[in-house]
Image (tube, rainbow, N blue to C red):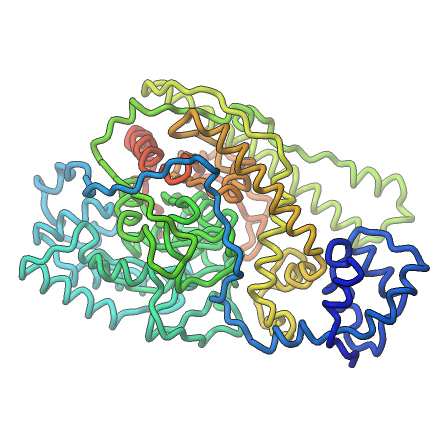
Length: 621
């Protein structure tokens, strides 16, 4: 093998750290004895620069005295929880963040609790909100043990069909429930999560149980510690009943045990990557769950499964003990049935833990009686008005015009892509009626909305940062070849993405970071006049706000009718089995950085006015 002892130093001396990714050059020399001018030319092409032939020859001696720097760092075997010594901060200069906390103020308990008490069949409580369940526990009308056993029984009944569970934590749950009941009997009430059963996305470490990250090769991984949010929910008296699925390494809904299902149509996947939390919550198998989002992993499954999901501000909730995918984009948040439930859970898990350096001491002050009419509200007019992207048969036309240039396989693939675009366009056009109805309902409620325009910036290319960070987080997986153990191996799956990421020049990563800083400033300026901004869920805002760190609340906004376009495929294992009659759609409320209280206040008013969150999937079908 090539001696790499001074590889990085040689590249730096030639100015290549700013023009040519040294890792690219090294990657194409694996198994070779010496770097050649042709290798430099190939690497330069990937890096997007031009190096004249005479300069390539000049570089050879230096590059062939390469260092073992890469090898030395890899020899450290850095675990996933070691972060880079660079911290992402989404807060623009001059931003004021409140730090004074006030006591949690819940809305009044629902009248039916006092009037009717506990149903004869305890399973009737399965779809009750955390707010209502907490009142039953507080008033000792139902025990934590009874609730826990009810949810454990539902998990056993429905998981074989929906595949949302990785590990049942039954022994831990029963012990916690008994302790919660003892504490309450002794007058020690810990708050609205006391005795409430919940589920954790299986990227959160729980001592004594495996933490699989949903991925082949990690099925028996254990981490001898509890994640910070697990510690906090334990302290709040919540009862962990299960560790729930995620798509392998937080991508999609396919994990090493199969595919997690959508309770509204079990032939469909639940979307991801918080696949299990959304599915189990929607199916009434936990009272709430904790998911994570890097780029849509709370938003997408909440939309597919009809749950209410909160993606908090970046830096609101500590990620200690959670699998790292992107240190500058990962966020943890609750998936529930109601907006106020999100507020209750966020109150318990937010704030610095002394370990996650990104978390600020920002106050979250929830007042269930706050007047939403005082809020300044905007809406993303262009996103609501934007016609859905239609599919044009250009590719198919080209194939027909030049049949001798297209293989049958290529023709079939082009036809499949055309059909997929057409199906998406039909579904998007149908779903626009729900967006328009939401704006009409908000106006009917008396909400005065001002149009807001998204700053015109290339948000999607900035995702380069996520891809590079994810590849670094799982470097050993790629270099060891263990990436072949992952369930999915397609062009858009992590193994291929991680391999391709090794060819991202360091300079382009930093350029994306600079562009992201510009986006942070521009979006903060656009959001400044408003407390809350209403947006379609599937729009530019999803990428934009994940990059800028803004919070989002995703809630159910209706259900497709019998006239809805059918899915392109109705196969159980086809990614094109999306939408169709009876499936939910969603709406998103955005807030200022650390402005969750305001966006939750308006979102709760809308949710109470529409009632979509009270619908239940038919799990007997």
